[in-house]
Image (cartoon, rainbow, N blue to C red; front, top):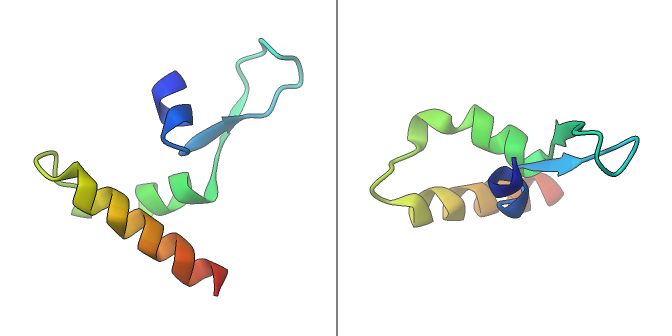
Length: 59
C-alpha cells in the first residue's frame, strides 16, 4: 500500500491515522482503466500516459 500511495494511485482516508482505509485517486482510476497499456519494460511511458490523461480530464 505505501508504494501505491507514493505513486499517487491511492490515498489513505482514515477515519483514524492507522485504520488502513484507502481509496483510489483519480490517477489510480485512470491506471486501472488503462492497465492493458502497461508495459513493465517501459514504466515511464505508462506514467507519462497517466499524466496526459489526468491533464485531459482537468481541461
